[in-house]
Structure formats: C-alpha cells, structure tokens
Image (cartoon, rainbow, N blue to C red; front, side):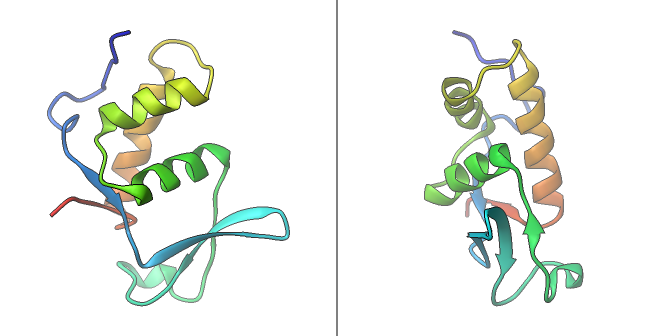
Length: 107
C-alpha cells in the first residue's frame, strides 16, 4: 500500500517527542505533563489533555525517532479511516506539535 504524505519536503524528517513532557492517565483522562524545561511559558504548571490518537502518536514518537511516513504506516495498521485522512491528520499533528516544541527533529 502506498502512503500519501501531504508534504514530500518534510516526509523524511525524523521526529522525537519532547522528553520534558510525560504522558500519564489521571482519573481516566490522558494528559501530557510538562517536567523540567518547557519550550513555551504557556506550558508552565499545566496539563495538556490528549485524545486516543494523540496518545498513539505521542507513544510512537517517544519510543524512537520516526518520520511522518512511518507514523502514517503505523497508524493505518491501528486505525480505520478513509484513504488520505490519516496522513493529513498526522501531518497536522506533526506541524502543530513541532511548532509548540512538543516534537523536535532528531539531532
């Protein structure tokens, strides 16, 4: 199965979850909790509520650096969605989380 990536320019960048955030479940709700140095002062003393898909992606990018293409392939095995929808959502996730400093490029 061919994977469609929204942007071929960024498709092969290897992304890592920011290790200064922990994923935890509190009272049945999944949250990202900032620890240590945070990339943005808006994250001081807060928790970020995340959904099931974000938990999947956070764990995926936490285990090792991965590309968008690899994330799409893994998500397509785990979730059912119309063609292209998963790739679009992962592209948006990567862009937003990278902009906020929650994901960073592998160094």
